[in-house]
Image (cartoon, rainbow, N blue to C red; front, side):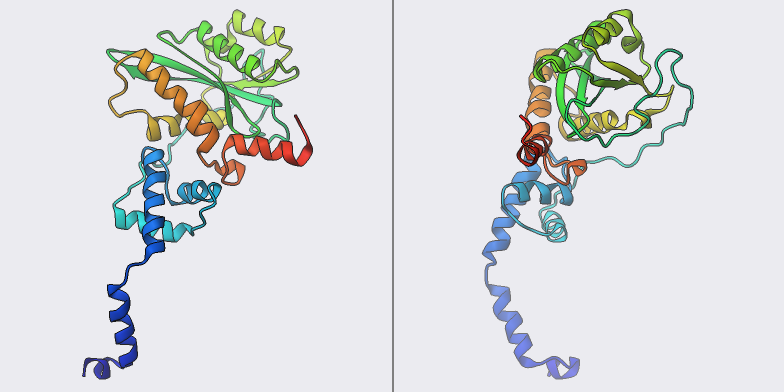
Length: 273
């Protein structure tokens, strides 16, 4: 009687009843993979990122299906909303903005970016300096310290230069922080035969790849209450930067694959060693 009243075929009703009692094994397996990827990212990845991460493992699923499974499991991504930056046009007197937001580069070791952020460790702030290879958005050098000084940024640059095989002719871009304008750092740039570039004063968009990296680190990985000590922070942040971020985390600038996979793909296509 109800089917007649609603204009529904009786066979459709019985198909619904049969499907309701059955178990969708593929859906359960996919939900397990979604939960695993979400846990791996420490609640940092949304449906797009989880789709790309699973695709790198050979598990194909649509973004909207993953979004539905996340909703069913109560998984909520902790990415923040957009941030408003003030605009500025003033360049450094001696070091111009040579990069000029040309973030899409053709080769590794063509442009590196650097910046500093702060991390709470125990009872005080500590500081993290990172060097990012702009081609694949890969972290290639980093250092932590209790002081945000020229020693910190120089140590991060040294780390990157050694890891990447001591390349020459690299453009190094940063903001106008006093650490990057210090005599020691500029001498190191000259020693490594690099070209220095700086953002306009107060303009975070001129170094947005670094801003994006630090936002991902703090929203996806760093505990809300910080770390208990600097050694603990160093181990966990190193695991994120050189492990999860470089090797597993999908990056939109790389077409949804990790920075390491993007560089390996270039080597395969072009034969670069």
